[in-house]
Image (cartoon, rainbow, N blue to C red; front, side, top):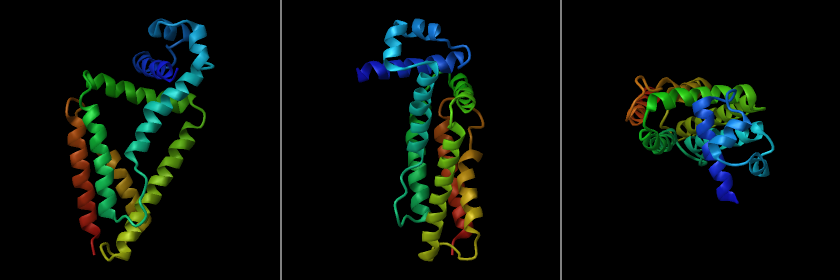
Amino acid sequence: MQDRKEYILEKAFEVFMSKGYDSTSITVLQEELKMSRGAMYRYFESKDDLFKEVVDKYFFTLIRHLSPQFKEGSTLQEYINIRCQKMKEISVYLDQIEKFETAFLNYTAFIIQAAKVYPGFLERMKRHRDTELKNWQQAIENSIEKGEVRKDINVKIISLVFAKAIDMNDPEKPGPGCFSKTTDSTKKLMNYILSLIKA
């Protein structure tokens, strides 16, 4: 039964990605999944319910993976390393996608649609961002305590700089291998920022 649900989620994700939320009706989903309406309703109450679970699986699970659980006592260098390692793991998968430019644009549209129709999506994103900033702040404070980072810096502002470093390194030219290159340049950027605030 779980395998059937996973199959529906995977295929529905492909349909939402290629056709968009608005153009994907229950009838379209039935045809693409090759299953009856009744069979679909055994697993999901509505198109919105299905879309919400697709977003949970293919967006929120991804950002949870990219934002590892913060280990108490982690220094800034340790947190940079673990964040970049997680990015590298995802980039290996993303770099294997054929027709990457189309997939990249479709995924961006998918996230925008989620922001419009998924109740609480933006609030969850804000909570995620707040947690991320808190983690950067804690890593910086740990590094200050250990004498690795200067005491005279503004911890909140530097936390924002590290959090934004990931956003600043979106792929310049989407295509095969671009995410691995982006991960490498993000790590260089973060290490450079760290070098500017070292004690």
